[in-house]
Length: 280
Image (cartoon, rainbow, N blue to C red; front, side):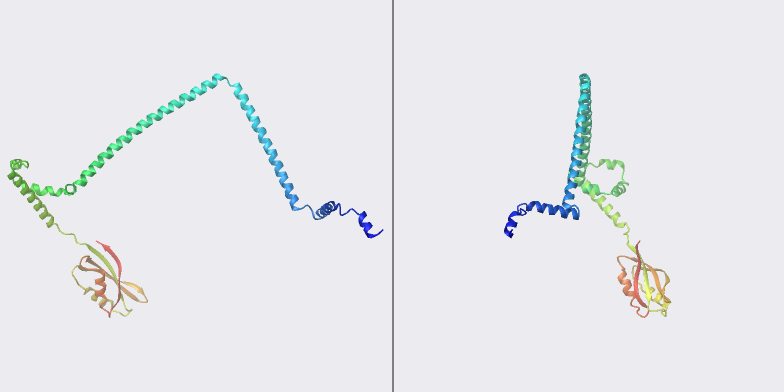
């Protein structure tokens, strides 16, 4: 038999797909199940569980519907009517209570609106007459002082709504009262702003004569300056600084002027610092 005859008798090429499938199965059996097949099996198992769950849920729903239908069939129609009428009565009562509450709230809102309107009116009047509102009660004192020597009958004789002469007299009295009030305000003492300052005066070294340094500091004199108590505070390495207190008038003496005057003693003073500053 020749080679062509042998090939002609073989049908392997016609069944190649079957042989390939057999080879695939052989290798899968040797290497274990493939990942794809395993995933398909897991998915099919999950789908089966979902189908079972749906079936159980559907059965539960059907059972609940059947139970409700039986319960509704057993209840008499009269009881249903009574329950519906009771619900309507409850709804009507709640609506009435809401209406009463709404009326009460409307009354409260109206009262608040009226009070707010009165307040706005008063504010507008006060804004229009600021001079009358700003007049202190002290203005009444000079009036009594001017009219204190006159009799009560003289006060009664003043008629602000009379003739032009009476108007001139009233204007004169008003001017006298204003002048008296101005004079009284001018006699009041003016408040002077003062401050208490604590200064740290540092020497050059431990050999500096601190008594002489303090004496130099106290020689600084100016209007509005008053020196107070002092003490020596250790700084370190045997060096002490002079801590001195003073009271100054804010309009006349400032910290810059004090520092400038004290640092003029260059032989004793190295620097001046403000340790504390308090208003009096």
